[in-house]
Image (cartoon, rainbow, N blue to C red; front, top):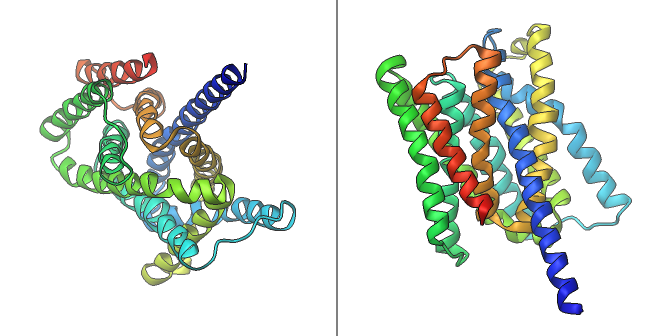
Length: 303
């Protein structure tokens, strides 16, 4: 009986972790759409990133204060605190900035597919540093998924956008930094709890964004129209606050490799929204890329 209960609890933990990862992925998928719409209003990358993080600060600060004063959780000290601050830098500030820069050069569809090359990097980093096992099924899932990435990149780079390579390089760099965050954050998430870890890391990333803005922009750059503020609010809450907590909790429950591979469903959401909301083209090449991604995710789901 105890063994049956343990198996049930483990299955429940796995299922809930997969749901959290899928939900966070769906919300993150909206990010590219809102960014593209904001760019159409004339806002620059640094200003948009700073607005997004400024609007998210109250949510993370309120969560942090609640955890410290109501739930009596202790702040990390010394090396642990420095590690969390460093992970906030690479995982949410640097990765976000590189991703936003890439969207200046490529479509939302290609950006999302390229960004989700991070499961390959995450799996390899997990294998190198965390002794995670790479099974044949996982490798086949990744192969199918990223064949779709390459098809769409070839199409866009050769037929539509000659500077697509620049955008892809920016987004690939974003994928690498985010994969480092996913892999190396796991022990700190387990030790501190996902809510405390995420609150500190995100507040740190907001501070980095503000410093960047202070060195590169003027305060008058905040004088944007109402549409930009609207998209910034959507980015802050639905594409930053909610999914960041969900993904961190998913990492704690199912590990970085499974979380990152579940995230490959993100391009499917983004492609549909990009076609509907941005009017981006969708033909046989886009369909083939999307089908390959869906097959990869379905293979993982079968597992």
